[in-house]
Image (cartoon, rainbow, N blue to C red; front, side, top):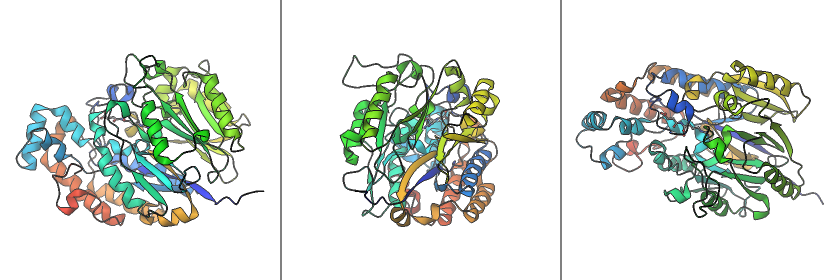
Length: 460
Ligand SMILES: N=C(N)NCCC[C@H](NC(=O)CCC(=O)O)C(=O)O
């Protein structure tokens, strides 16, 4: 007997780049972040590049929404470590004594919304609700405090508890290092059907013999992934935990979404993505058979794309999107067209008669220089029609919203931000003014603690 499956669509929630986007080199292990340290950023261009991608994908009929940026600088963080006085005093003292920490408090990293949370659609969970676990991002100071505002934002967007459950971040300790959807892939048939959830980890806290990188940190632990699966009420038969190859973490693959992407029954991945490729595929095949799906691996050999090219071009940090005709489009950063090996590979892929028959390339240079490609910039949320109707509607990308957001960016954003500009107290005022206005555009009152006069709250 065939059960009736609700129609569901994958919404991509792109992080809107905030007005303080800058290059502070805060992410050891992320090659682009390190290489561009202390260069001058262009927040206006960064935001416009991100919006152009959202607009183009929405215009193509993909379900697209926007995640607002976070308030910056994080005065509560700065005050909690001994910088006191007026806001301007706090900024001046932090800039003088601890410029890297001021930069951390100013980071626009929430733009990479793939790291905001792990999301399990209602078709996979025990209670039939969509579950979100906010990522603690505790591997890096500048990302470790994002979770407080992320929880607040997700609860504002998905407030109807009949449909949605938003879990707070896991305890912020190394055993539970959690980077959200960047290390999570869902495979199956249709979006609305039960699927297999694959969690990829880089380290096991309580097994000193487990593979682990030597040079760069592994940000995701097995223990964290298991906790998320438990919180979401996932069926163990449809949940697969997989070790990332630690050797590639040491080459700059700091998240699994830098080396693999899945959609539907397709897993597009580099042969060095997993510690044990054969067993990973076998486990996925076995689990997927349980939901009547057959894995379709699209494996990229190192002879076609060496790891250095994969990391430099961000080929795998692409979005793999199902088109109305059931074929798939790969959304890649422009750098993929500029890398000879990758460009050659992609042309062959699109013409190969396989599931991916279209390439869409975007200029996301501002984000890329911080190690964030198309996939980093979006959080995937599969929603049934009823769930989509229950979420906050004013964040869904439409042409009028796009136009309003572009005008807002042009009004408020700077086109150059150098490390020394972070000492300018005016920047903090500009950011607050911009975000206050944004909440009106998006119909999200009291999204930020500063809007309730609470700049001292830990999540301010
Ligand atoms: N792969 C995914 N899903 N996300 C990419 C996140 C990039 C981010 N970069 C930064 O945080 C750079 C900050 C700086 O250097 O200023 C990070 O390393 O966490």
